[in-house]
Length: 566
Image 1 (cartoon, rainbow, N blue to C red):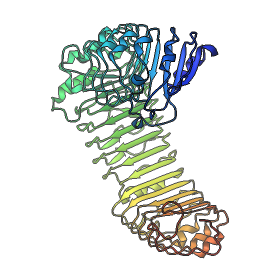
Image 2 (image 1 turned 180 degrees about the horizontal axis):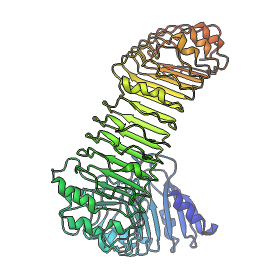
Image 3 (image 1 turned 90 degrees about the horizontal axis):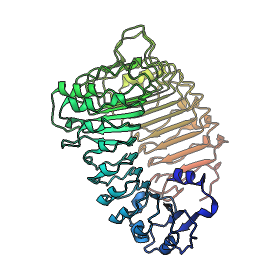
Image 4 (image 1 turned 60 degrees about the vertical axis):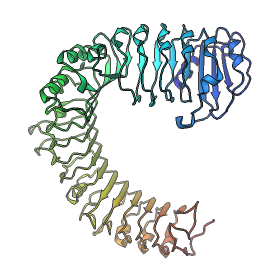
């Protein structure tokens, strides 16, 4: 909506544009063509709607919230209570986004309407009379998450070019014969149906661009429908999402695989997402010849696939996400000697219970450009290769053996370790060789008693967060000695933490010290007086800084060197 306002401002003169408040009586001259109304959604009544009717040639109405607010607060039907749209017969642009609205059948009077934006509203149904707007070119329904149904006669909108349905999660079917809208260039969502006119073949004659999400592919009745969708002849399509229902009835793997094979996209594709695929193997076209321009791939809930296609060959692939491929054992299964994933920058793997290693074989150059690696819930993964370019590493629910690999990441600047129910101490040597590390967090380690058992040197570390470690009692002095660049230290929800130790004096660069939910903490060490850079001491309570509440109830005394104000 803000982009639309900006675009209008490029070609309209000052006297043609008016900004008004929906609760005020603003006078609009007859020459006014464009109006923006700032709406306060909490007003129960609106004035000044007659002012709109004075401008017989009004072309544009943009209704915007008077202040930034979430759609959940905009439940009033602002538009219908404000204005009788049947009298605005010259309107070309109507933008009612992010406020509470419904749409009446009187929309049919706006015969000249070109652009209709009802995005991010609570609209549930659109009137059939909408299909009388033969000049409509853009219909924006993004994030209308309550929208249940589209008008049946949408095929009558012969001039429609752009139909945005992103985020319309309650839609379960498309109107029949949408393929008759031959001018359609943008269709962000197509739901495969079983009825006549709702088959995948409706995409055949549409020269679609930008993005397309195709859902309920399990409803494809025969292979011919998938072939007639003709995705390979849509060179303007840049983003493609293909989705099967996760709880759909089981089909023969042969049929599912053939349907997927028939959905080959054009080689201009840049982003590919696959969800819920039930086949045993991926299609042949998922190689470097067809996907040569792809920069991002997401594979999720492909439960029968044991092996990935040769994604390591893709020359431009920068982002790869793999979620819930429960039978996958390796990310890379290629032979030695190949340069694998030559452009990949970010890899996220989540919910891979059988993953043993990232690569079946060692010795090849793997992920030479990888800067960010995220690992969630991969219990069988016990080792990581040396990845010299990786700067950010996240390990969620990693075992002790996997955590030992952290010391291989010598370029690491950010390390986040989350959720471990077994480790009492971090593995020996895990924090060695991490002189480049700038930020580290350890959260939800249920048995952790110590951050390290050996002397470490994290001379570059600037931020350290320890959170939800209920067995942690103290920081040994040898741990704090090596943190002479630390600027922010946070200890939160560690219910047995009682002692920061005199090693605190080594934190000469510390600026922020946050203590939250540490009921055993009684006092702070005298070494805090050496923290000449400290400007914020946060001991969190209700509502601000207190020392005698339920968060740190035993803390009564601060060192005399600390001056503070309550």
